[in-house]
Length: 243
Image (cartoon, rainbow, N blue to C red; front, side):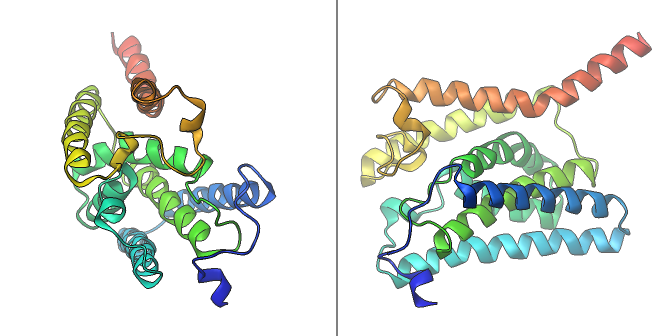
């Protein structure tokens, strides 16, 4: 059991799209589908319990990551402040689930779910393969971000608008500018703006700094547009029918 939480992992490293990764993605997809299916048929009281359950589970998953890093002596403000995209979205998602806040939903759906989906497909787990705590923690946290955004959309009836897309793009880029200067001040690499991450990632396939930054921007815009596309199509069809 201790080896599962060990800093110096002696097991097999994480294998991108290996058997364990593919099984995990399959389980996550089935779990989210079941959540949406039963959520649509649940009573208002049960839906509230589901939202609180997701919020509590996400809080535990993220908090355990900080506790583990403290326990192994690797918690530093240069790495562990909740400033990476998914770290910010963890806590915004918790607030959204509890308060049903419309403004936070826009970011949770268009930015959080899109970013977390990419993190599920290419987890930043480093050397920690199955069954280490780290890989389970990162998959759990990111899957709940996706699940929460889809739950609020499919079950609770929330949806983004064209203005939502504009707000998310503007404020996320303003946030990136702030983080750029913060990285310079404290020697961090939040949002991977200062340099490429030290562990293997999709960014390794991109050009050197700073040329990979606009590529990341374009990828982010593509996924936001992809997540908004179903609503754009619905609005277009409704306009044709009513027009």
